[in-house]
Image (cartoon, rainbow over all chains, first blue to last red):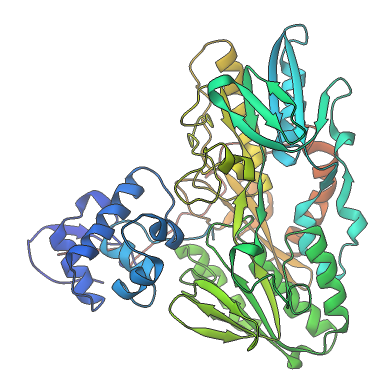
Length: 103
Length: 422
């Protein structure tokens, strides 16, 4: 759970630490969450985050595969940008819901 | 005569054929269905075959058995759809014209997409169970298997019947326990997602099952290749999981003609961009897509195809009568989840609502229990095979609503979700 004060705006998070309202996302929010994940965001990170947000807002179900096909990063690069669980970490930082199965 | 063409005579295509045959005026509309395969498989039954619960012959019938007598069926493979000309080309060279096209061409496992998966070990130490051949051969393998490390791996997140791999793990635990050799088998569930369960309420209610059944979960593992020499699955970030027996859920893809026709979405998995409510193809007004062939964000499952069929029937009629496409699909799915030892649980959800505990299909009375293990749920799952063959495929009404209902569900109190200042 995030408890950092930067901009004094109230951001609602789910119990798993994902933004409840993706429209509350700002680059500052991304930096704050990324710090918790131990990630320093670069321009390439932001390119990926903006791609994720655009796809999400167009109702696209996201997968590691699709990011590998995006032309922005390869799957290996995606792993090096967001080590461990790249899709769940990048989704959290991008302010979109947790990637999930049906159950 | 106007022409309505259906590609694919699986669950979704057969239901649409029957529904539209009953509703479109026979004097004005000629309905044709095209499929490359004469046999209809009851795919939920594939799960039971490896464990000897179903015999292979219980899950297969002739497709034609479920067609209306007057329907025209063409047994050929579609090679390309040319929407600009309203034409479908077949492998034989024949060309079919259409006024309205319904694509119900489903999805299939593609082990060749992953290096090493269907090489030397395929059907020796690596099996799938989403095909007739795979599930049948796996049954033979399990009969004689002396035990070791059983790894169940999902190659992708976007797969048909997303709960089936978990059911496989539960049934494997019961199978080896009943054979008196559970202590000789290690069961690992290796998934690209953050866990076997990913929705908050389901995780809370069901994740204890995994510990109870001693099923080890390895999350965040995205398969790159299989190291055949070392018998290990290898992820993109070089995690390695050794196996003695690998039960793989390979990458799932839509039909090849989708790629040939340049109709797939950006995943390159041959799923067709589809309006998630109207089920009209996003780029073509007179093409509708149903079932596993769509890219709509709900599960690829027979129950979904069934609920979609109601919406699609209305919207095809709306389209033909030049009315707005008012019928709206809500993403509704419901699935039994076998948990082994004669029990099952049940989930019910849609685009907006995650699986919740409660009763289904009737509030209070049920009789099925949502997100709870029971013998009755298991009986329901087994009974469903009869319903499938005798009611569902022929497009008859079932006593459940197409759109999801919250009436029988328990309200969730989520104390942890407080606003946070950032």
